[in-house]
Length: 389
Image 1: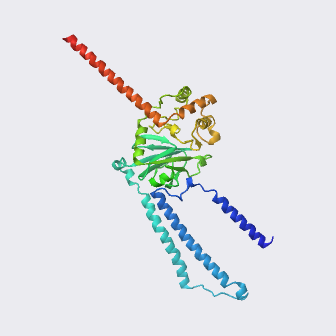
Image 2: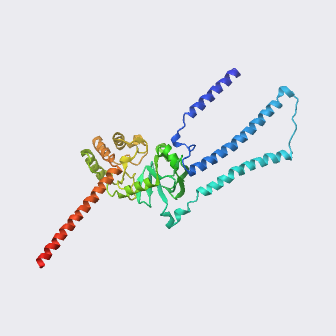
Image 3: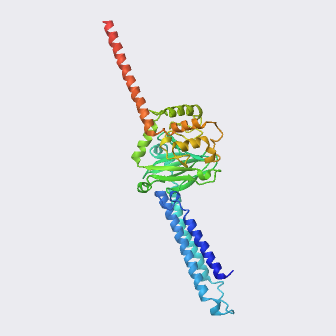
């Protein structure tokens, strides 16, 4: 093949590959757009490493070009023999000291930030830990559970966090090794079965607003056939909004929703008879085998991958294996299409606002009944008093 044609072909292939790779970028899962203290510090370390590498590459390329031009054969002839520099102490010192200096420049901030970001002593202080935001993360094939021990609530698949505050994490796994990663916020740490890993993240309020208060996380450790589908969503909100959300969740004592449709009521009955063994619909306790579904209707996604609507919920219930191969729900039950649609109708009605209204109505009814009982007691007391007179 003609050398000129070969070079052109290689150049075209290289440009095509660069364009193809550039189109694979996903801003949702990128650590190049940091959204918090940890993410920014890790981003700065990456930039420092890249700058050092670019300097090294630039120096090597310049020296290569100088040598290539200065000592080309057409200029010096075939018999030219370059000067032997073996044993030149000055050169040996230069190419030994320079790499050491570059390594020190990179190592000092890396070690400093590694220890700084590993400072989670407050988590192990019984008194101080109660004043902090702590989340126990449990990784399962292929979903995530989030327990808030200080708020005494449990949820799954959607992590809710306050902005501009340190959020501490206890990480563990229930089955195989996973890895917890929110690229925009920083971090990435293994979740193991045999031990608990700890670290913290901080979510910037301004960056959260830019991202519509939504960040994306995923499992970063190959854990089975649906590893690539083990995603979760992070909802970042102000500290006041977070406290309000936690209070509202804590008030949900039972999964009763006022004004359910007829199909949703039947779906609730089917769910209570067939699904309660694996799924909880109240935000307490973390011993369920499947994801907690307390405020399922508020979530944006089904199984972390599908848009949350009745059709997709029903599709998931009918055939979860086709959507997430290897999940533990497959083969555990039999359900008709009609019943799956009814359960989907019920689950999409589990919204925090409606659950809160139902809880408030129950509380009001209880107070009203107590008030009526007191009135009856007073009447009885008056009656007894008259009889005594």
